[in-house]
Length: 247
Image (cartoon, rainbow, N blue to C red; front, side, top):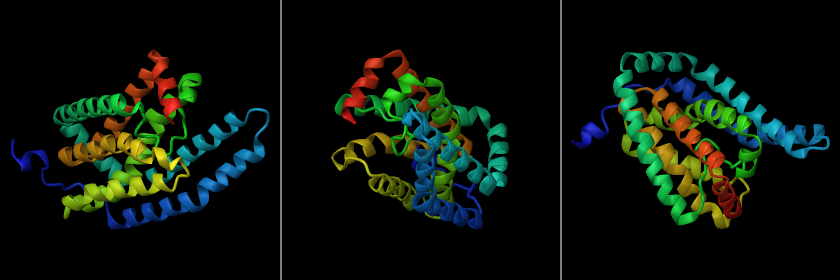
């Protein structure tokens, strides 16, 4: 198999206007909206601060999803048509991507003790919450986050560049994700390990996006990997405890 077969010509890029709107929203989200939602959550908190905090995060995820859908609605619709027309090839590629992601994450877990869902960039839903409220995590990590995150990062920073400069598109996505996590107020001692857990699935999502020319392949891959991780935590609670201690 040639390099061209692995990384074929990409022709499904979004409109420049949509990309710029998405970048603008991301800046507003990081420097204004996230802080406001946390303040609101703290204001309305009653006896259960965890519920209030999670409510703010769910609201953030819903806002992300709605805004990304409004910005990329035509692009998502066109990409869905590509998925429908070429679904056997798309799902074969997705299955390969998921298999590689599972293998990489298994190796990373054995080396670091961390198993971090790709759709939870800022570790908003720690592993103990996954075990306590599994339905909320399934909704967030498998339904809301994959669509919002893939539009916000894969479409914006990869899809807009891959057609002309694929060699630059992959590093750009990695750089943006690492930079956002770096400024996410986490323990910097864990920064390399968490990035190591997070990046492979996102880069594989970009690869299936390029290979199939539809962002829905990326969305499905991230959702599938997150689903497998949540199920692993539910079936093997000791994994959740191990990761929680590591974080």
